[in-house]
Amino acid sequence: MSDLIIIGAGPGGYKTALHAAQHGLQVTIFEQQHVGGTCLNVGCIPTKTYVHSASFDEAVERQPQVVEQLRSGVETLLSHPNITLVRERASFVDARTVETPSGQRYTADNIIIATGSSTKYIPVEGVNDPCVVDSTGLLALKERPRRLCIIGAGVIGMEFASVFNRFGSEVTVVEFLKECLPAIDSDIAKRLRKVMEKQGIKFNMQCGVKRIADGTVFFTNKKGQEESVEADVVLMATGRKPNTEGLNLEALGITLERNGAIPVNEHFEMKKIRDEENKKDDAPASSNSLNFTFPNSPHIYAIGDVNGRQMLAHAAEFQGHHVVNHILGLEDHIRFDVMPAAIFTTPEAASVGPCEGQLKEAGTPFECHKAFYRANGKALSMNETEGMVKLCCEPGEGRLLSCHAYGAHAADLVQEATAYITLGATLRQLRETVHIHPTLSEILIEVN
Ligand code: FAD
Ligand code: NAI
Image 1: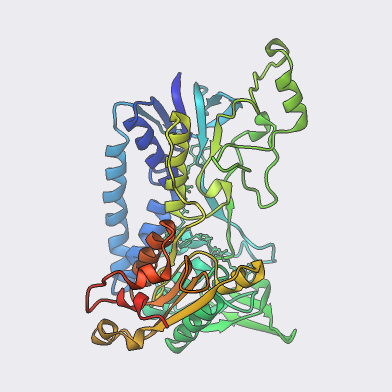
Image 2: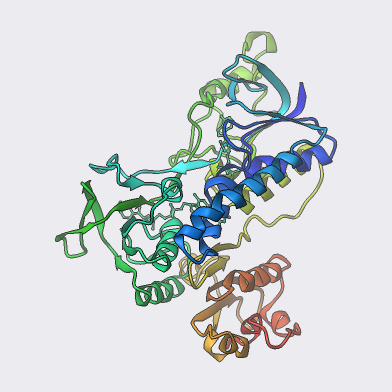
């Protein structure tokens, strides 16, 4: 019996295991594949290795080395005396017990589900065509595709479009919506798309894919006419779905969200137990063969991609951190409403807080301030004049609400703004903070 079972050793699972172990909890963590999860093995790390490689061949060579090095680092972290790593798939037997295919059963007072997500394929004819791959399949290619068609101009689509264009592939993107990157300020997203168009990427916006046949992607354009793109490889980048299959969640009587995510409350405790199970819970323990204790002592949590909140590695990590604090009765002040994110295109884009459109829609009073890279001395000296920062704050240089940006090192600028927003600082306070000259971060105090 351990204090804590964690299912999945991605950034959510393994970092949480370590935090719990360092606080004296006995942890058993299950991993069916490689430690490090999507992020380390087929997500953040391999893609950023591609971004920072000069050619496709260099990227293919470096990727396994970088992944292997980091993976062995995670293995070392998980060799902590309070952690037991079980290299098997876990599924629920009841609310405090999981079992593995080898038939072993494990129990714990608390269980965290951190099973991540996988590619969501659109239901069109030809989706199983051998030329259609997801991000994992694209990263496994040993030969650079001459023509790459990307379905979806979200985060994955834009990052791969940028990197494969730089490697010399002919890249065409087909996107359903009017603008790319739905989560980013539309002004910033449009400017970034225009820059990428100038770099040679072809975008077909407001186009719905109808079918794929022998490497040809057929879609309907915004005028309702059929068009097609021929490609050697087609990347499916149309979103990701939470991994819940095979967990036997039925044994817990929960109803998944419409997007397949595990429903959670503000402490990431699993919620929405079926009514019958709630009734059972009120009944004497002897009448409840599965020994449910919900909803009085919720001890099953879901963190990271599987709860569908924010599909980001750092979101998974901080959610897990909060769960351990919650289990231990430790207070923390992590602001899950202030979640920065970056898109590693060339140039980068990044954001924290609601975009201008969302603030308008919510009726929040705000004012918007902008600054351009071309007016910044460091950007000029770096020959990185393409870019813009947009800050939204309460009227009268008040509390900062959001920062959206594109341009060189946009993620670093947004990270600085994240600190101000988290601490409740105002635009006036940001402007009164001395910034080193010459730096890109001066763009934040140059907004007008
Ligand atoms: P995962 O990392 O998916 O880990 C879940 C683990 O659980 C997996 O190892 C899986 O094998 C295991 N598992 C599943 N079911 C079971 C079971 N029943 N028993 C045992 N083990 C199980 N995010 C960023 O913040 N920055 C980026 O730059 C970035 N780039 C990305 C690029 C790509 C191409 C992709 C696909 C994603 C990227 N992401 C990025 C998103 C990031 O990878 C995820 O948000 C993050 O990995 C989620 O962490 P997690 O711990 O919730 O799940
Ligand atoms: P996404 O949700 O960001 O984008 C999917 C895009 O596909 C949307 O623009 C959508 O309109 C489009 N689409 C859907 N159906 C379509 C159709 N039939 N035809 C044409 N277009 C269609 O999902 P994506 O890019 O797959 O990424 C998944 C998640 O992974 C993201 O939500 C992100 O959180 C995470 N991620 C994060 C990264 C980072 O932080 N840098 C990098 C890569 C992924």
